[in-house]
Amino acid sequence: MELNALSPEQEQALPVPDQNLTLRPSGEDKSLPSAGQDLAVQIPEQDAERQPSAQDPASQTPEQQKLDLKYMKAALKQAEKALAIGEVPIGAVIVYEGKIIGRGYNRRNTDHTTLAHAEITAIRKACKKMGDWRLEGCTLYCTLEPCPMCAGALVQSRIDRVVIGAASPKSGCGGTLLNILQNEDFNHQAEITAGVMQEACTEILQRFFKALRVRNKAEKKARRAAETAMTREAPEGGCRPRGRKGGNRNGSKNYRPYRSFMSVGITGRSFRLTGHV
Ligand SMILES: [Zn+2]
Image (cartoon, rainbow, N blue to C red):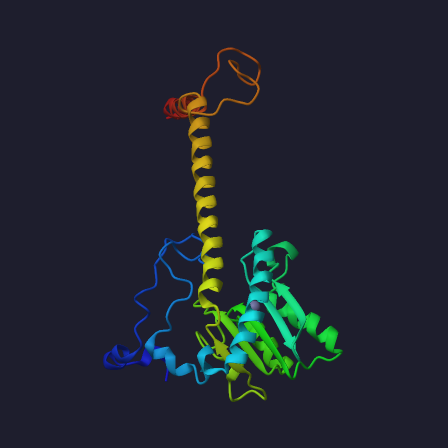
């Protein structure tokens, strides 16, 4: 059925958008979370069903929990590397038989490519080490829930398990927005453990976005101050030609600001017209 063919009753039955979302004025960078927005937001109740089997870290054996903490710390170390170069701090590592065989951190701005996500870099390195495009028997640890691109690549790599730190309300495809990792229609599903070191993984992101907001605010303030200073320097009503202080284009000292020049021109023209009539 087409959407515009819905009856008022059916329209009322449509899901209401998340009331907690912050609306922003147009033109603002929507990729940045607002001041009050929690990065690891709770998954709305209606979406909880979309998480078929993301496991709680506590459901793992104590040995596995210990290993998960160890490798998530390694992923966080990668995220710190991204932070150090001014990138959104996201890190990932891939583990095979107790060894890290691939590491990666976000370098999207640095490398000028969409493909420079932490998970993609880690997959590339792990495949090189394994000598195979298949990553069967491997586990990926990522500080932030994979995006559609990375989740797709993980399914393609046939990775066994994905361990997630913080949930991503903007692009999470490990259960928050979609669950690409466990879609039954694909030929492979990965086991998911979500919420390992969630606080630390969220904190590093919040630290980055807080610093970014402060920097953006300072830049905006400096820009406004420069604009105000320029306005004060300019003569009343207009723009003085550069390098000709006190003179017009011909160097004459009878400098006439642009606005009054225009008004003279318009008056002169209408006068001439009147004269013709
Ligand atoms: Zn990604």
